[in-house]
Image (cartoon, rainbow, N blue to C red):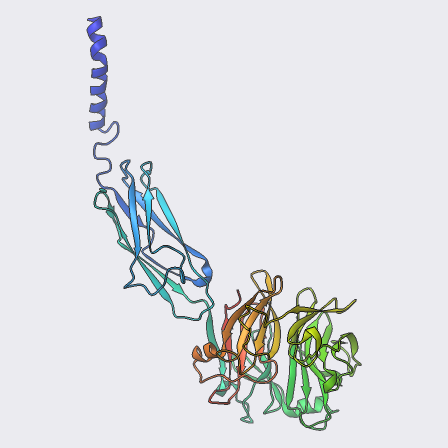
Length: 469
C-alpha cells in the first residue's frame, strides 16, 4: 500500500488541482475567450503648438496571448499628410504582450508638426484592426485626430471703427497698452487716438499742435513710437512742410503731454529704464549718424550722444531687449560693412558699443533677395526666448511685404507671414502698408498691423497671433 500510494499520489493531487480550477478555485477555464481592445477616446482635437498626442489602448481579458493592433491612415478620409502635418508612419502596429493583464494599456505618441503655413484645420483618420488569426475584438475601428492651425488673423478694427469725427480714417505708429488698447496717430486727421471697445480721442489735432507750439505748421507725420512699463507713449512727430524739426513727444497715461526734446534728422526711438533712445541720420540734419538719448521726464532737453558711426544709415525702427541692448536696421546709404544690416548697441547707458548683429538678407534667409527695406524692428518674447520681429516693407518682396522673426540668441531667421497671407486671411479687402512703424508686438508675441486705403485695400488694424517659433 505504501508503494502504491507513492505512485498514485501525484495523480491524485493533479486531479484535485483540476477540480479546483473548474470550481473557481484557480485559473478560469474560459480565460481569454472574450479578449477586447478599447480606445481611451475615438477622436480628439489639438493645436499645432501642442506638440504631440498620446493614443492610448486598453485590453481586457487578455488570456496570456499577444494581441497586435494594426493602425493605418485612411487616405480617403484624411486631409492631414504624414511627414508634413504629423510625424508618424502611414502604417504601424501596436502590440499587447503575452504578459499583459486585464486593464493594462499601451500608447503611441503622434507628434504634430508646428509649421509656418497658414491653413485650415486638418484631420488624420486612422483605421484600426486585429488580425483574423488572433481571438480578440476591437471596440472601435477608427480614431480621428483633428489638427487646428494655431496661426490666426483677426481684424481688430475696420475702417468704420477707426473713422474719427473728421472722417479722415488712418492709423500710423501703432502701439498697445497693457490694457489691450491700441494707440496710434492719424496723420490725415492730425490727432492721437486709441481703439479698445471703440475709438477714443487721446489728443485732438488742435491740442496736439498746441502742445508742440514750436512748430507753426500742422503736425502730420509720425516717424516712430514706443511705450514704457507705465503705459506712457512716446512719439516722434514732425510737420512735412515745417521747420524740419522732429519732436520727441510724451503722451502720459495720465497728466499733461510734454515735448521732451527736438532735433532734425531723427527717425526712430525706443524706451528703457527712464531713458528715451533715438536714432538720427546726419544727411537728414542730425548732428551725426548714430544713437542719442533724453530722459523720459523734463521738457525741451538737449540730446545726449550715445554712440555714432558714419557707416550707419538709421531711422528704420528701433527697439530694446530685456538686457537694455538697442537694435536698429541700418539701410543702404551708410557705407562700409553695415549696409543693410541690423546693428545693436550694448550698454547704451554706459560704455556704449555699436556692433553688427545680423545680416537679415544672408544666404539661406527667407528674406534673402526679397527686398531691402526693413522699416521696423520690434523686440518680443516667446517661450523664454527673445526675438526681433522685423517688417520688410519692400514692394519687391516675394508675395508682398513680409514679417519675420530673428531669434536674438542664435540669429536664426523665420518667416512669420507675408502680405498675401495677411490679405487672404482677413475679412476686409486687401492690404497696403502705411509708412513708418506699421507694426506693434506685445508680450504675448501678437503682431498688430495697420493697413491704409490704397491700391484696392482698406483701412484696418489686424492682429496676427501665435506666429513666433
